[in-house]
Image (cartoon, rainbow, N blue to C red; front, side):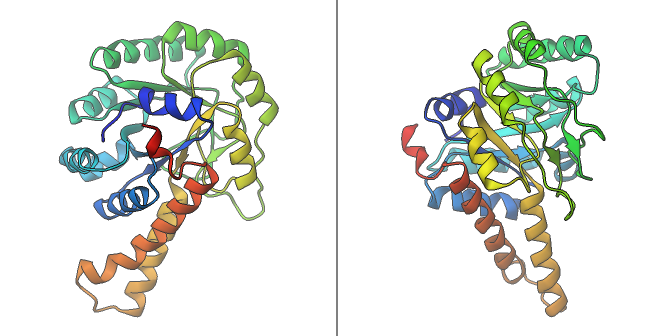
Length: 286
C-alpha cells in the first residue's frame, strides 16, 4: 500500500510510535527491508538520496513503487535531502510520495523561501514535504550535514512551519549523520524537543538515527518524533557481510548465493529498530 508521508505520520503521531525511514541503495536492500516489514506487520518508509538515485537511475523507482503497491503494509517512498528544485522535480516525476528539501545551510529567509516554493509544487500533486531547520552534524555520511550542529530555534520553527506549510520538520537536537566514532557518545537535547512539541503540531523527523542510544530514541518518540532516518546502520552490516562472504568464497558468483546472508543482517537491524520505535504490528492501524 502506497501512502503519502502526511497520511502515514498522522497515524504514528496520534498513536505515539515512529516509522523508520531506511535509505536503500540496491534492490536487495529494499527487498530485505520490505520482507521484514511485512513479517513485522509494520509501516515503513523507503528513502532514496539524490546521490543514490543518480547511481540507481530513475527506473529503479518504478520497481520500488510496484513493490509498495503489492505490499500488505503501508509504504512511503521519500526523497532524502534534496538540495534543489531540480532534485524535487525529478523525485515527483519518478513517483515518490514524499520529498525533503534541505536548505538548512542557507539563511533562514532563503530556507523559508525555497521550502515554500517546494511546498506549492509538491502539494499541487499530493506529494508531502519535509524540511529542516537548524543543522544536523556529519560523521562522514553521504547525507551531508554540518561540522557544527546548530540547534533548532523554537521561535523560528513555529514561524517556519506556519509560513511554509510543510508536513514534517527535521529538527536539530544533537544528532549527526553517519556512524559515530567509538570515543563519541551522542546526546539528544530532549528538553528542546519537549519545547518544540508544545508549540508545533506537525510530526518531527530525527535525522542521524544510526548509533544513537535506543533509550534516547524511544524517549524522543514521546515528544513528537514520528519518523527516524536510518542509513549507516543498515549499510554497514550489509557491506560488512558481503566483504566477509566474498573473502571467504572468492569464486562465489551467483547472486542467490552471495546476497541472502547480507540481507539477513539487514533484516536484523530493521527488526531491532522497529522494536525501539514501537512500529511492530502498527500496520493494523491503517
